[in-house]
Image (cartoon, rainbow, N blue to C red):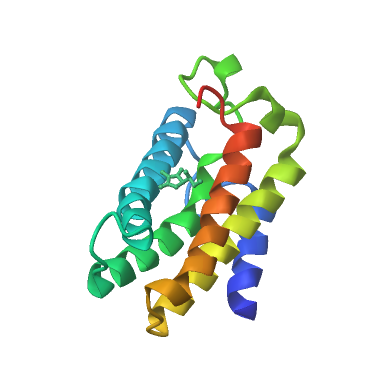
Length: 152
Ligand code: ASC
């Protein structure tokens, strides 16, 4: 856990991709793709938690792992030159550009909650027992959308 937190801190601290300098166009496509993939996995899990879909433990565990991994990548897509002001079709609100500390705090919380959720799923908890951690993670997603995502 400590090692993991250190990695998150380093990543957010550098606010740039680990392995290469991002082309702004690639960065926008990357972050939108990461969030799209998170929703792809998270949506059916919500349906299972809410009982709109039968609970499939294997699919659920796979989804939780994927969401945690994707969450850890999301910050990399937020780099200079990728806003509406730079000509990109993005829902990233202007507030992001002068509230990056707060944004990074919300992002770190989301990553931690995704990790915690995935860990609890890995422990083999059932649907009822997983509900709180799932709710915490969904709330964390929403708090950032409320503040930094436009045109909901
Ligand atoms: C999803 C999804 C989100 C979050 C959010 C949680 O399934 O695509 O963006 O959950 O709606 O409040």
